[in-house]
Structure formats: structure tokens, C-alpha cells
Length: 68
Image (cartoon, rainbow, N blue to C red; front, top):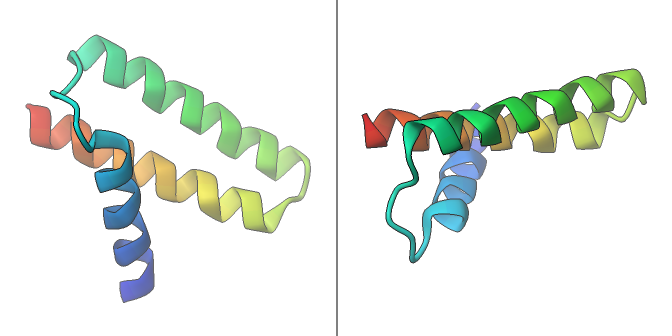
């Protein structure tokens, strides 16, 4: 399970590197977009993409928490 958190941490740093934190409204729109991509991966039965998108959801949620 630690690999999940490591992947999410890596993605978190990738999306926040060199940026000031975005507004909560902007981060929410990014989160919703990522959740939509999770839904697409489910509909496409793409397990690899499903995992990648869920990691991105975790990373964006972490950025939102950090920014709160």
C-alpha cells in the first residue's frame, strides 16, 4: 500500500512544483476533471488508466488540503 502513497506524493510534487497554490475554486475544478477521467477509465475498462487517475485525484486532494 505504501507504493500508492509514494505515487500520490510524487504526483503531488509534480503538479505543485514551482507554483504557488492555486485558489480553492481552481483546485476544485481540477479535482472534478480528474474524477471525470476516473469515470472514463471505468467506462473504458482501463485498469492502468483508472489507477493513474485515482493517484491524480489523491494528489489534487492533498494540494487542496495543504492550501486550506
